[in-house]
Amino acid sequence: MRYPLADPERDLAREEDFDVAEDERRCHTCPFLRLCARWR
Image 1 (cartoon, rainbow, N blue to C red):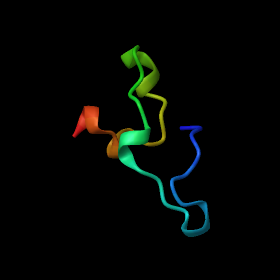
Image 2: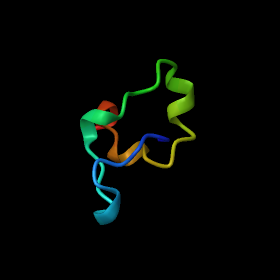
Image 3: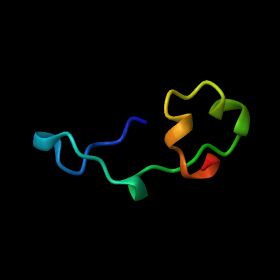
Image 4: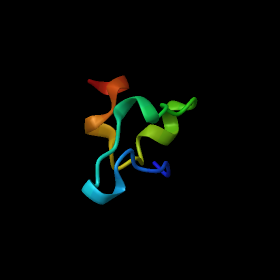
């Protein structure tokens, strides 16, 4: 996830700013797997 934060001063990101990977194989190495909307 290399997107700018919605509010960098408060270290806040918006979920809708992040897209899921097209290839699910990349998901298994992502440190945010448990938080991802695709896998909830």
